[in-house]
Amino acid sequence: MLLRLPHNCSLLCFTLLLCFITVGLAGDPFVFYDWTVSYITAAPLGVRQQVIGIDGRFPGPILNVTTNWNVVVNVKNSLDEPFLLTWNGIQHRKNSWQDGVSGTNCPIPAGWNWTYQFQVKDQIGSFFYFPSLGFQRAAGGYGGIIVNNRDIIPVPFATPDGDITLFISDWYIKSHKKLRNDLESGTSLGPPDGVLFNGLGPYQFDRTLVRDGIPYQIINVEPGRTYRLRVHNVGISTSLNFRIQNHNLVLVETEGSYTVQQNYSNMDIHVGQSYSFLVTMDQNAGTDYYIVASPRFVNSSSAPKAPGVAILHYSNSQGPASGPLPDPPNEYDTYFSMNQARSIRWNVSAGAARPNPQGSFKYGEITVTDVYVLLNRPVELVDGKWRTTLNGISYIAPSTPLKLAQQFKIDGVFKLDFPNRFMNRRAKVDTSVINGTFKGFMEIIFQNNDRSVQNYHLDGYAFFIVGMDYGVWTENSRSTYNKWDGVARCTTQVFPGAWTAILVSLDNAGMWNLRAQNLDSWYLGQESYVSVMNPENDNTEVQLPQNAIYCGVLSSLQKGQARKINFSAAPSPDIRMKTVLVAIVIALLGISGIR
Image (cartoon, rainbow, N blue to C red):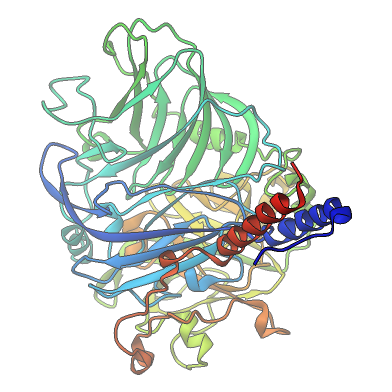
C-alpha cells in the first residue's frame, strides 16, 4: 500500500522526516570484528618459529575507528593455552569488564571464544592491543588501534597525505614459553636476537651483521607529501631509538593527547609507548633511506646483534639506501633521554575528542587526595621464587578475577591494603590492591631502584606526567613539577636510579590494572590494581556482561562454552533503523513529487 501525502504539506513532511532521520541516525555506530587467534609460522630473523597471529596475520589487523564508536570484537582462542587481549590506552569508561587482564576477566580457555564490546568514548590518537597473559606478547598477537576525531572537531595540523603504522620491538627466537620458564628459574632474558619492524627483520645494511634472505619492511611514499607515522614499541623490555635518515620528525600526538609540535631528529620510544609524527618527504630521491630502531640503555653484551632497519622508498627513488646508519644519541649522555621526555608538552590550545581545548582541564589547580610512592627493586628471591616487587609486594593473580570477586562480594580474594610507601620489611607475595577514592586526585611517584629503564602503565586512564629526575624523590621535589602543560598519556618511563611523578583524576569507576610494561618485570609480579568505586551509586559502572566467563570459586556458574554475541550476523540496530528510514524517505519523496 502506498502512503499518500496532502499535496500542500510536502515540504513540511519532508522537513519532519529529515528531523526524524537526524535523530534516528544520531546513535553512535557499531563496528564488528571476528578474529581467530592461532599459532602461525614465521621467520622474522631468518629462523622459522611459532608466533601468535590474528586471522593468520602477524602483526594483527588495525582497529580503525572514530571516537564514540562502539567496537565489538569476537575472539576465538585457537592456541593451546588460555588467552586474553588487552587494549593498551583505551579507557573503557566505567567498564573494566572489557579490560582483558587477569584482574578483570577470566581467561578465554583454549578452543573457546569471547566477545569484547566497548566504546572508544571521547578518545583520539594512537594505541595498540596485545595478549596480557603468560608472556604471550613475546610471541606476537599485537596490533594497532587508531581512534579518529569526529569531523566536527578540528585537528591541530593539516590532514596528512597518508597514515602509516609501525610496530617496533625487540625479538627473541626462543618461544614465549621457554622465556617465561627461564624467568621463573632465575635466568634473565639476555640480549634479544634482533629488533623487528612490523614483524619483519632488518634490511641487510651490513652483510656481517644481517644474514641473507631476511624479509624487511618497505614504506612506499610519494615525494613532497606529508605522512603521519604512528610508532608503537610493542617489545618486551628494550627501549628503542627511532629515526629516519635525513628526515625530520614532527611530534604531534602521544597516546591520545595532541602535543606541542616540535621537531626531533630521533625519539627514544620506551616499552609500551606510542607516538605520532608528521614526516614530510622533502629529500632528494637519489636513493632510498634507512628507518632505524636501535636499542638504548643496554651494554654491548646485552645488545642485539643488529638494530631494526626498514626502508623508506620514494616512488622516484634511483637506488637502494647506502652508507652508514644515521647516528643514535650519545649513549653516555645520561640526561639526553630524560631531557627529551621533559620537552614533550601538552598542546593546551588544541581540541581533543570534545570541542573544549585540552588545557581546559587545569590539573595543576586540583587538590591531591592520595599520594603513593611506588618503589621497585631488581628481581629477588621471595618465598623461594624469583619475583619482582612494588613497595615490597609481589602481586600474585588469584584464580578468581578481582572484579568478579568484587561483583559477587567474595571475601578473601584480595585485600585493599596496598601500602602507600615502601615498607622496610621482608618482601612478600600477596594480592594487595590500591583503594582509590572515586573522583579523587591521586599523585603517584615511581621510584626506580632497578638497573634498567622501567615503564609503567595504568589502564582506564590518561595521567599527567609532571616531573622526573635522577636521585630519590622527596617532598621538595614537587617544586620542580610542571603543573601547566605536562603531557597526558597512559605509559611513562622511569630511568634507573630516578623517579617519575604523575597525577591522575580518578573519575573512571572500575578495577584498573597498574603494571610494569616491561614484560619480564610484569610477569614476575610488578603490578597491582586500583579499585575505584562510587560509594553512593552502584550503577556508576557498566553491569556484568551477559557473556562473562566464570572461573576460580565461581566456576560452577559457567555453563559450557562462553556464549558468542553474534552481532555480525545482522546489521546493528542503528544500521537497521537507518535502512528503514531511508526507504521511507525515498518513498515519500517520490509520492510527494519533491525533487
